[in-house]
Length: 182
Ligand SMILES: Nc1ncnc2c1ncn2[C@@H]1O[C@H](COP(=O)(O)OP(=O)(O)OP(=O)(O)O)[C@@H](O)[C@H]1O
Ligand SMILES: [Mg+2]
Image (cartoon, rainbow, N blue to C red; front, side, top):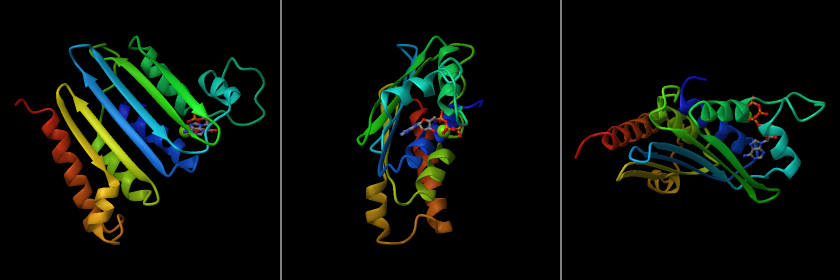
């Protein structure tokens, strides 16, 4: 994976696979602290301690009787290459929070990529899930709560072409504003 947004896509898909109804995605770019932090928090089925250990270190944790996933290990590697890392907090039956932090200016730090399209896909293709999306860049912040969008839509589907276009436009515009000098 070459873009952080693709890692986010993968991590959020894990939350969806875990039957989460609420997913919070937060990106914090703190240029002064030279840090970029991503967190994905869900109320899905959670993981046992043993599973958490296994997903962090799929190659060193003994015999595996089933396919080993790569989503979390790849995120971990991408973070560690920049002097960062990941942490996983999870409780069976309650949910999971995965946090990854990166050295902002590190030469190996992947670009964020097309986060507007990534969030649009996640939001529109998973109508059963309520998303909170928060993106901070320095002092600026963009927050989107899909419950508000759904209220506004009054039952119209998020998969309607016109709605999908609107969601992408809204995300794109607000993302651009985060990087404009004020
Ligand atoms: N948010 C989550 N809630 C519950 N279980 C999770 C969550 N995220 C990951 N897991 C568990 O950790 C495993 C590993 O996740 P990972 O993304 O590394 O691989 P994968 O999803 O199995 O495969 P891949 O991402 O390569 O398609 C998952 O199969 C799942 O059992
Ligand atoms: Mg995965």
